[in-house]
Amino acid sequence: MPKHVFIKTFGCQMNERDSEIIEQLLAQTGYITVSNQEDADLVILNTCSIRAKAEQKVFSLLGLLRKQKEKQPGLHIAVAGCVAQQEGQQIFKRMPHVDIVVGTQQIYQLPDMLFRLKSGETKREISCDLEKTFTIPPFQKLLANHNTTPPSPALSDYRKFVTIMQGCNNFCSYCVVPATRGREISRPVDDILEEVIMLVDKGIKEITLLGQNVNSYGCTNTVADQKTSFAGLLKMVARIPGVERLRFTSSNPQDLSEELMGCFKDFTNICPHFHLPAQSGSNAVLKRMQRKYTRELYLEKVNQLQSFCPEIAISTDMIVGFPGETDQDFQQTMDLLETVRFHGSFSFKYSDRPNTRSADFDDKVDEQVKGERLQCFQKRQDQISLERNRKFLGKTVEVMVENVVEDAVQARTGTNHIVHFTSSTRFIPGDTVQVTIIHAGKHSLNAEKITA
Ligand code: SAH
Ligand code: SF4
Ligand code: F3S
Image (cartoon, rainbow, N blue to C red; front, side):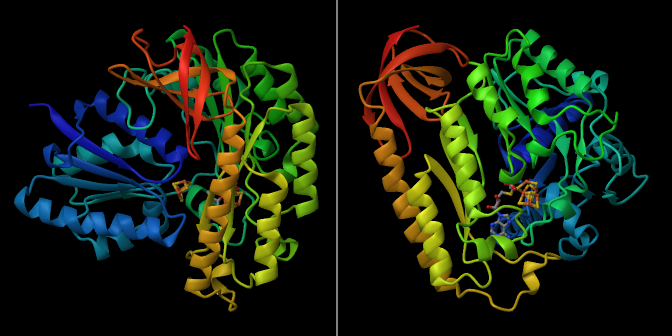
């Protein structure tokens, strides 16, 4: 009898990539992935702890799973990811029906943990150590862990994430990631290059290099003690034949080098989109956030980026209502939005997180004020996105197809804009098409196809 696993992924691309690895590891031990929780013998929640709401979602879902387990006693429930790492044993105490807790760096243990559980060797399994060395296995082992057959929940089979580093050493005062993902460790260059070559050999056209702070790649605790910078690595990946589109995330403004900016000018396959999280426009807030740049430095980097690559789209992450944020501080954030005119942004209300420095700050901003500020920011961002998107009207752009449902095609520009069009030609994900933009909304564009 085949066994069935349902994996639900919360949070960032790191988790999406980890879920893919988990799916492949389990496929090797005879599990089939199902898209319906009720059909599963094993439910895995790959969790996120970045804001309180993300964590609450996990616990309410675990509450619902208790009912499923009452009806289906053989069901196994596993909690992976950042909430697992953060809470460890506590999860069993709060949710006794959970069978497995596996931390962010121990996912490779899952098949063994399941085996022990099923053979009755143990009643519960937990593995949450954070390692001091890189936990992504060398390339040869990873080969088996790259599923290039769709469907994957996050990505179809023409684009893939490649992890280049794990953890984070920045310790921004509000952030759980250094605690949930451990110290920053860069992955050896050769491993990364081999993985990319393997992926393009299998037909992958778009690669996204992943790390919490890719700009400090190679600077800290590198396995092979190499001295390749992120810009150096990016150039090597960009030169691999078959890499049609290359992206990366996330970047910290303070480490953004001119060498990296120059890559946008020198390589046509590096997509003209830069996600550059600002978090706040106020120097006082940035300081308390322990971000290592000022708004002036941020603006200087934006100007430099635009001069290297005039068509570049810049997006950001913003937190409103950080402890102590005054109306004037918030106005500085609005002012940064007006000055940069971000193409898009992810904005959040500040949320207290366990074991972070800002959780102990006593000048918390009122929930209602946070809500008003968020609404104000998002409303203006939407207007700006729309104004920027309207600049595309009448222009011909190259897009890569993401999704096709009958004659409706969803595609993406290099600048990361989503484009919809209809076509009687049968496209498949990964095809490149020239289209003319005929309508602009705040979140997407509509187009007419010109050529395939
Ligand atoms: N490494 C990335 C960010 C990863 S977390 C970087 O430094 O840019 C993704 C986003 O979640 C952050 O950019 C931040 O905007 C938001 N975030 C993190 N902790 C938060 C908190 N405690 N409250 C609200 N938003 C938070
Ligand atoms: Fe968190 Fe800051 Fe690291 Fe980003 S750089 S993951 S916000 S600590
Ligand atoms: Fe969430 Fe962990 Fe990513 S906290 S944002 S899943 S690193």
